[in-house]
Length: 114
Image (cartoon, rainbow, N blue to C red; front, top):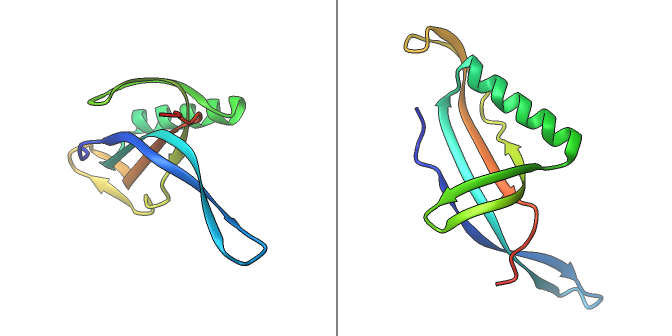
């Protein structure tokens, strides 16, 4: 249904503009990320995504455990829903109307200092 997820750790920086006008990058740390993309989601899967987003709105984050080739990430994460799922069509396989081109990104809340 979807492509293989990509996940790992990415370096994160904050850019600051100095009085001189020069821009400096300040290293914040490494943050866990996981990207998932799906051609479509069933109505049950959409309900799961909506419940995760509702929990995040209430708590400000989700508590997750994700196994990856880089080890297991246990901690708080933020889920971001891509805005690409703008097409609504009837899918013969699912025998349902579906929103297509879903992308979900999970980002760790805390930075790893390594």
